[in-house]
Length: 287
Image (cartoon, rainbow, N blue to C red):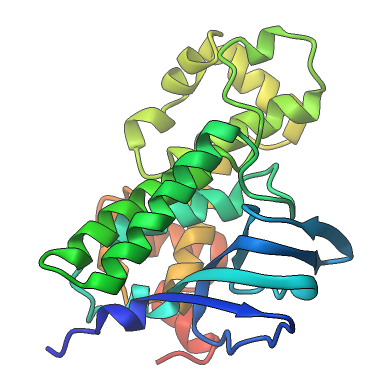
């Protein structure tokens, strides 16, 4: 097997410009734009934010930012490409990166905004960037492993800042807006989607300091869906994405998401999606 080059999976670019030329994003899965210095504005989906030095923005493959530069700007751009899903990559950190990216993209409160607001985390991110760029420039022994470890830390900090609202263990006991309460339950589930033990209703209820019956009844009342069904449908959404955007086999996807085996996933998928996973790929033009 010919393994992919590191540069094909994780792209690093630092440049200074007074005019933004949109680079090719065909293979982009996750993009991070760091403003080292300069000023301007970035627009996405009708919302515009004026950027300044040390601001950080993150984008998914389907999000195409429009950048207008007011003052000559030095950008640092990190990209994880779609090739991260390839079976030709032998990188232990891949699963961790995928999970963090999915959590960031799927968080119910994620909106287009600067990615990090907490000053301590902002300082930490810029120290990580400094050392990643240093390792990437010097390319000394083990530099790829060091960069991979630092990228894992960077993604964790970004995930922590995806919302200013942290998990509140007394959330359902407070008089907060009901949409905020449900969003926190959604966020907990999505954060722990690969941990079957933490997805048990008793574990979720314990996290929020309420009984299982109170949690189940509350969730059903507010969403019209059961917790079990919501968790299952969210897993199936991930399955669909993996089927179309990765080289993982159905068996591998089943193992990643806690299904007993390929046949178990196939049976559940057919029940809820009216086709088998393999047929789903064929129906969407994938062999």
